[in-house]
Length: 172
Image (cartoon, rainbow, N blue to C red):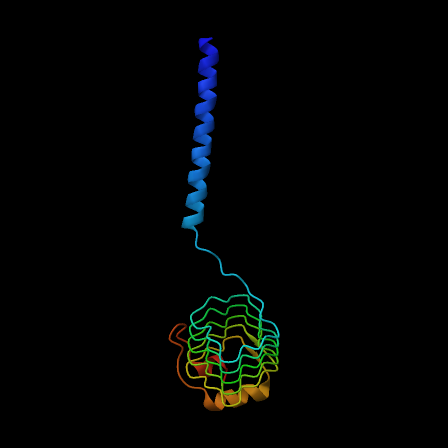
């Protein structure tokens, strides 16, 4: 009987220890790893004058959304789709727009001061009246006519990437 009791108590202790270890690891995993950004779908939404400043919206989609006069300053917009979106008078000051899709977007009078657009696709975008002081256009795909217009107003150096705006646009 002593051997049975010993085996039973060993199994109980092992079970309790296993549960304790599982709970401890679960709590550690829940609190030690930062939550990842949740990609959101704002396609075809009317979001005029909306404040998205300072948010992590990476990989979200704003395809064909009306975002006129909205604020995305200092936001993480990596990989976001703004395909055919109305971005008129939108504030992108200090935003990270790396690898975004801006194709067919209207960036008329948009403020891109110190924004990072590295690797963005903006082949059919319109930038009339945009402010691009200190913006980083490294590897951005633009139409030649838009690139020439942007070169006429390009100035400054991006404070994050330390790249000159004119150089990133490959201005003559």
